[in-house]
Length: 496
Ligand code: SAH
Ligand code: SF4
Ligand code: F3S
Image 1 (cartoon, rainbow, N blue to C red):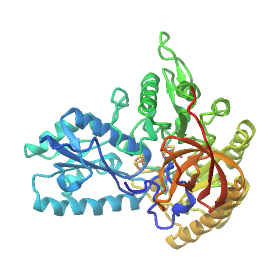
Image 2: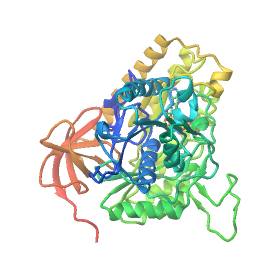
Image 3: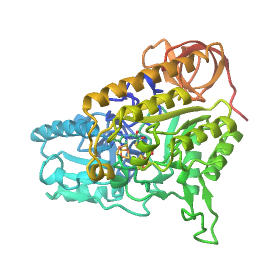
Image 4: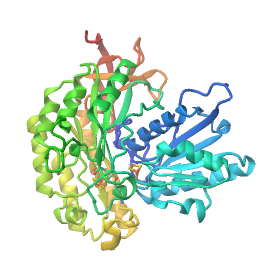
């Protein structure tokens, strides 16, 4: 399996990020597998996922729907009867990567005309039937809320028609579907808690591709996490575009919808999930600065197994830019939220997302982002050049007028500061002993194993007699800006 953490945006540096962070929007293919194809004559499905953790999680829902309909999956694209590509539209680069991939499959279809090639996810939703009609790249197009319809759509294709379903739903959460885990590591799983987004940040395509925000039934979330724990998983990441706006049986104003049913907000949901076992780590992504409450921070502080790590995208350090971005907070508001985190959760790691060269961004405004980086000192950052997306508010209202070259130099300056900050933060860990969840053999060395600490930083240590899913105590000896290295000083017994 390829590394999900690989950012392919040219200047986004992978080494500044933790290797298995869920906040990755990358355009990198992950060849997925369902229960490995047995030779029972069933049809074979090959799924490839691009984009954020939501898409990886959705591909697991797709795998489940397809397996209910008699498909087994394969890692070997050559033996596939159906190929589904789950796509991302977040930046132009993400879409061009997928287009290249689809062009390859188009060639393949010349040799194997009966192969069904389908496009799923955000690009499917954005481009709708254009991919079928104008570009003739695929046989099937299914948007993020149409996956239950996939078996039917495939039948349509097999009967010689082109099939499209891009209807967005106000209530589809796939709550009852038990995802088939495609990631074979068996340590860490993603669980979606909301779908869609109601925020309308002016640069962002997600509200158009994923539709309105809706929350999933908390009991089904609990059951899915509990099931992961029973299968041996030791970490779960709760996913939503804005996890802080999770609410069950409540309007956005906090009014109760149905008196006879309990209500649940994000803080309460985390408490429910944290109760599964002290050995089950809870992570979550993404937090939104305008909605992250002290109540949530207190729940994180209270539970040892909720990781002290918050991904809190700021996008820019300048209030006017934030206003043009329609983010709903100011620089000062964000800094106050950082203070709240540091006050309520001592020793919490914080990461962010930053965009360089948004519409009309002046040099002074950019300098505010740099000064904010020096002030906050985020542990990690995902850093991007602004990429204009069709139909977004920014595309309609503003000019994408910062020259590409300036976007590039500003991004380099941002990356350089982040590099310094990440290195300085990691250097402070030298000599400390940290609890690490073992994930497996290191990707870079067969002689080492890798896992992550509570903060989500990758920790490498010499291979010993450890298994994945063990918790080990590691004394940190050396570091880079991206990883810590050390030696295991203790292996923890599972909690009784
Ligand atoms: N829901 C999350 C982010 C989802 S998109 C949040 O609100 O924070 C992930 C990241 O991609 C964003 O935080 C932003 O930094 C980046 N991004 C989104 N649209 C972009 C665009 N048009 N150009 C460049 N980066 C973009
Ligand atoms: Fe996009 Fe903003 Fe929603 Fe995040 S909160 S998905 S950036 S619109
Ligand atoms: Fe990409 Fe859609 Fe996720 S645009 S970042 S796959 S929500």
